[in-house]
Amino acid sequence: MPEDLSVGELGRQVGALRQEIHVLGQGINSRLDKVVSTEVYSLQSAYTDQRITGLSQDVQKISDARDALETAFEQYQLSERDRRERERQARLYQMIVPVLMGLLSAAIAVWAVVAK
Image 1 (cartoon, helix red, strand yellow):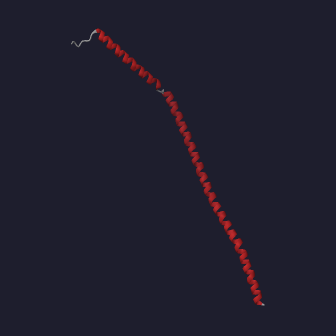
Image 2 (tube, rainbow, N blue to C red; image 1 turned 45 degrees about the vertical axis):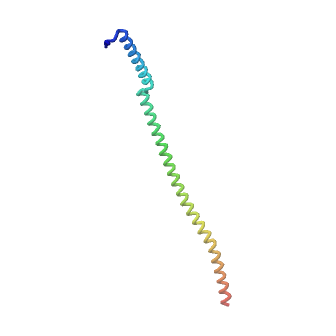
């Protein structure tokens, strides 16, 4: 068997190679159609960076507002505790003073009776 190919066989192989190269070229073209241009990528990247910066600022504002709210709530709790303590003391004094006045008047009455 000779290793030399006939002219017809060479023509078929060249045709097959052309077909494969054509298919590969179409595959490359379809992939290149999906690639984003550098201008579009840089614009999208800049927009994403701006959006991330804006969201970061929003998060910082919310965090600051939350901290301020927590501080205000702690201050409210302290003032409420102080108010309740003052009310408790006032009720205690309102109860003790009349009792002491009653005891004092009873003591004066007993003293007046004993002193006669």
